[in-house]
Amino acid sequence: MELEDGTKIEANFVVSSLDPHQTFLGRMAVLCLTIDKFIITYPCYKLNETTGEVEPIPGAAELNYKQIAQISEKDAETNEKIRVKFEKYWKDAIMKQLLSPLTPGKKTPMEELAEEKDPEKRLDPRYRFMTVAEIAWDLYESPEMRNYWIRSTMSFCGVLPNMTIGHAALAMAVAQ
Image (cartoon, helix red, strand yellow):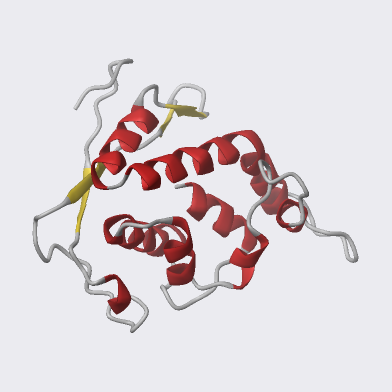
């Protein structure tokens, strides 16, 4: 597929019709079981090989929202809200968390985000203590998006469904 700016991209397929409760039981067999529903996602960023900067791919996020909406309008709205929070507030906190030395006795940027009073900026403080599977169930209503999120979090962060996730990885995973 080719996007507005001429970028050619490949689609990643995650196909699933799992019973959503199986994930909590530790049965993570979410590989192509049946092809009754699917979500095609597109990368939202690309590396500018000249500058070395990561740049957004115009129109990719919107394509993702449309794909998710075919499964669940609510999940598409959730995905869009999270992405906006990531772009506006979480991305800078993640970079500070990862690139700045920690100061004893001082809250980290991610702890500050979790304690933020403004719900538009806040990273849900419960997520620091929830497993990846629990977060998936909290964020999304459809089994397809729950399984997609769990699988991509496993790939992206190396965290299994029954594990909790570190602060910076959490914000990046929630925003994927």
